[in-house]
Image (cartoon, rainbow over all chains, first blue to last red; front, side, top):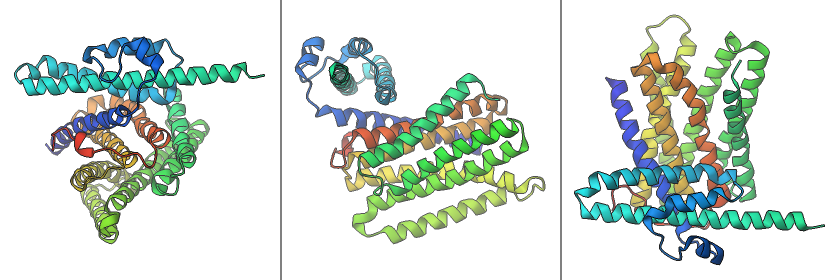
Length: 133
Length: 232
């Protein structure tokens, strides 16, 4: 009985912490402007289309990987999927919830574009280091 | 002996724990978050010692069994103290550090007493059962305290991004472990799988803290009300 209560409590709190943690990752990058290259490659300037997350992630796979950001990107990816599930189920009944999930998904896409910008800059630095005599 | 995947996860975890300390030194926040860094350094040393004992005595040896559970209990207490240091950070401006430390000491003693009462009946391996019980209970107490701390952050409108991320990642970590222990108690038949999962889950905290020290500047700010699941 006690273990059951602890399990339910832990899972509810886990969901809350996970959502807030993902939002803190996204919020930290939301003020980072996108470089011109990223804007050209993704077609995203200030607000990102909510459904473009997978497309930006595909572009990310084309760049050399940075292990430090892999975990965070996976967390945001999982958050994006949770939002997609909410949008397809609960949000059908509430327009306000639908609007909220769309804004959140759009911010997830923007986060992926910011990571893409960092990876491009990282690749360029690596290339510059290799070119040095 | 552990398999290749276990060895790989173990190595990744060790590297990430060292990375937390390195990133904190690089970001000039090592002293500011000293208890967190000491915990990570102790975890890295603990990992090395566990590995040495594992190779020397074997996976099923008594030495490894005792070292694993005793070091785990010590590290859980260290993590609890690291959590209390985050409370001190949040309540510093209110000059309530004294009360926080008193409350934390009281809660730690109460948890130890509760753990003792739970296993008081058993006569075999009393101390070992006590440390295992204490670890499990501290994970749950840690989870509740992190939840309280998150509530305080929202209420006090704490804006330091680094601190917010450290607290949230600790909350995710504690809830994962508390849920894992609860599953093991509820369904003992899947406890082998749950124990194997613990290794993977253990990598989350060093990864998230290394990211927070490496990527987030000390002066970065955000509005925590935007992060709450239920908008305030």
